[in-house]
Length: 325
View 1 (cartoon, rainbow, N blue to C red):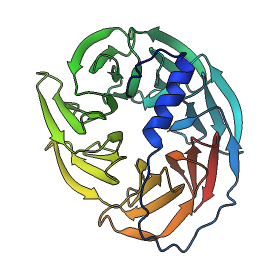
View 2: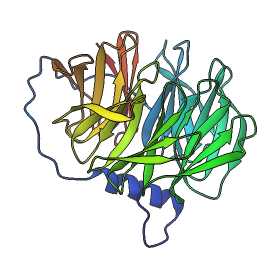
View 3: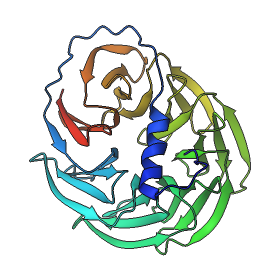
């Protein structure tokens, strides 16, 4: 996230950063749709809903309200907000910690917290000397990796104590983070450099993938052999083979993409367009765009498939759209 020259209140800073990040002029692409509804039901949540996390039993959807100090917990059976988890300082991202009942959450205002999603309570938290961005973890769930925005670094944290074990340098404006299937490499999007850092966790050595534009959000397939990375200014999705550490494919002509998330069976890829307020569907194998496009709320960012439904976080509408496929 780009730092401002003048000092504002933290909440004002966060709003300003988000808006500057998103408000750009774009050109539309041809889009033949067979479904273009605008009357999907929605759920009101906190301010600036962004990242989403689904509990393993699919019963609860967590919403990171990035302009607020709470996480909204939605019961997916009733599609109502069950409760709000207070005390998360501008929640940014989530990562599930192995085969546990725990999810780690990053808070932009210098916080990492661990939440027990069985009872939706904060178990522990730690404050740092830097604003915190994206977050991921290894397969065992004993190591957490999160972005130190101010320092242009990745922090490796002990998941039990949240103490810093190691740090790794990144490029400028680090944002999203992903991890390879064998837990050997980290991938970090550098929004100011227009690049992706590929970091060897054991040696700390780093290589750079030059993308141009503004690479941002990172999602993976189940085994983390592939990462899907949105490039907001280049209007494309980069697909990285994590073993090779290379971009092996791309989806072009995606207007201001945000999250790119696979369906449960990994046959479809759902891609959110922030400026168009749309959710496009691609064949995950051929990368061909499908004929159906769903309308969302205002300024969508996150998407989560759950059964025959798609939940979409509308950053500009403080709501979650519920799309029946």
